[in-house]
Structures are given as structure tokens and as C-alpha cells.
Image (cartoon, rainbow over all chains, first blue to last red):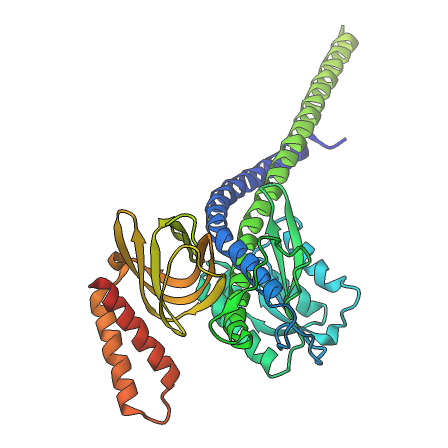
Length: 284
Length: 134
């Protein structure tokens, strides 16, 4: 049985760990509230964009456009949104698994546009090519960042260097559930559940091709931006949960150790007493 | 043709819902020129060019500087997905004027390295801002 001093020391160290996890939980709770209200403000734009582009595509039907039809290049760009800091439960590893465990992707075909240091490091370790590292923007995403990234991606896409563009992010369902998701940005997937409202043919003032040429970059930028906001909210949600679990685990361990400590103390008292009594008996 | 004489206008930016309300008419600038949209319009998608956005509410008019994005026009309402849009009180007049000056100069000089398209957009933006302040 461990000595009283060992148990006491162990309990002390767990207590200070608990204080840290508790503080981290409080911090991420506050951050989560802010990130969530930001994500909610963005969501209407994000959803509206998705719906509008979907309905436009459904209305124009199938037209020959590089943004809609598959390309010859097998190269895939994946925008991977993770966090810069750890201790967020499965948040980062879930996203990384989406890519490393993808059945049909070859490492050589994937170039990673990393937003978030954790994802960048893990994927580089796994032998993926990091085309670009934009880890700074995850701290405080602004729309301009998403616009620049989408402009660069589209440039490569138009030149035929990229065949497909994917986006890996964490969807924020609520505080306790976050879902890692992998969506294809380009070529645009024809909406499976096309919104059945009216379905009057959509008219453009200009030709369909020109209109799509202008709308698609905005669509890509807003999808990236929306994903960023969702991911930041998810990161804080995941961290809050992880730290909450850690705090309650520490609580449990402290309880067990206190019990052990008290037992050890009691047994040492009993032992001392027995020794004294035995000694006294021997003298008398 | 139109049932009602007003329709819903929604202007959404990535950061916020800029405007949401019932309006009589809305005017803005597109790639094909300035347009005014009344209720019961045929479905149409237009690309926005920098210009003044005029919202005709039953109680009066409102202005804003609308720079980029696109609008989906449906008979029952208009949804503007704007990347950049500002109310007049959010515009810095001196900055807008300085930007206009700069863009003009760049266009006048026509140096080989100038990005004409960019300068033109900057000029249009500055002009829209100043126009919205009037």
C-alpha cells in the first residue's frame, strides 16, 4: 500500500491539474458563446448562398461549364480546417481521419491547404503534400481570408492543375455534437434534393456561362468562410466538452485518493496504538 | 399582374443580416446597368456592380453603398447576397474621396504595371460610397 505521503502528493498534483482544466473549460465556454453567435450570423448567408446556387443550377439545367463538369486532372485540393491548439478531444483527429482513411484517395493526388496547425502537422507526418499553410486565419477568420484562398484555388482549377476541390471542416450541430464533414466544392455537385419551389426557369441578364463564372467564386468563398466559422465554434465546443470530462474525471480520482488516504491514516493510527498497548503490556 | 404592391427584401452579408423588410421597390446597379425591381418580377439572377442601393419603404427611402455580390429576384421577393454593403453612416467620407483620387490618378497615368480592372473597380467603389452619402 502506498504511503500516506505519496497519496497526498498525488492528490495535490491532480488537484492542480483539475484547476487548470476547470479554467480552460471556462475560457472555452466564453469563446464558444462568441464563436457560436458569429457562426449563427454567418449561417444565414451560408445557407442562402448554398440554396441560391443550388436553385440556380437546378434551373439552368446541365450546361457545359468547367465548374460543373468533371476535369481530367486527378489532383485534388483539400482545404483542411483544424485548430492551432490541442486539448480539444477528438476535434482534430476526426478531421484528419476523414482524409487519411478515405478509401479512394491516393496520397500523391492530394494537396492540402491547411488552415490550422494541428491538421498541417499530422498530415505532413502522414506524407501528404502541404500546398499552403494558412494556420493564422483560424484564430480570427474574416471574409477577406476566405476570398483570397478561394481566388487562389480557382486560379489553379482553371489552369487545370486541380481536378477537384474539397473542404474538410467540422459542422457545429450543437454544443455537444460536432460532425466532421468532407464536402466537394468543385465541380459543384448537382443538388440531390433540389428545392422544389416554383421551379420557374431562372433568367440571367447575361449568358448562363458568364453568370456562373461570376457567381461560383463567390460561392466557393462563402462556403469556405461558413466552414471556418462552424469549425471555430466546433473547436471551442469540443474543447469545452473535453475539459469538462477532464474536470469530472479529476474529481473522481481525488475522491478515490481521499478515501485511500483516510484508510492509510486510520491504519497507521491503529498500528501505532497496537504497538503502544503491546509495549505497555510487556512492561507491566 | 402582381398581387401585392410590396415584397420582401433581404440583404445578407457574411457578417450579418444587413436588411430585412417589406419594401415597395428596390434599385441597385448590376453588370447590365442600373435596375429597379418591383413586385412580381420574373425570376432572375443578376450580378451586382458597385453602386447605390435605394430601398423604397412604404415610410420613405433608404440608401446604402452596395459593392459586390449577386441578387436573386423572385416574384415574391429579392435576396441580395452582398459581399460588401454599407449604410451611409458607416462610410468614411475623406477616405472614400482619397481612394477616388488615387484610382483616378492610376487610371490617368496608364503605366504598364497598373492593373486597370482593379483601379476601375476601386474608382467605382469610391464613387458609390460618395454617391450614397448625398
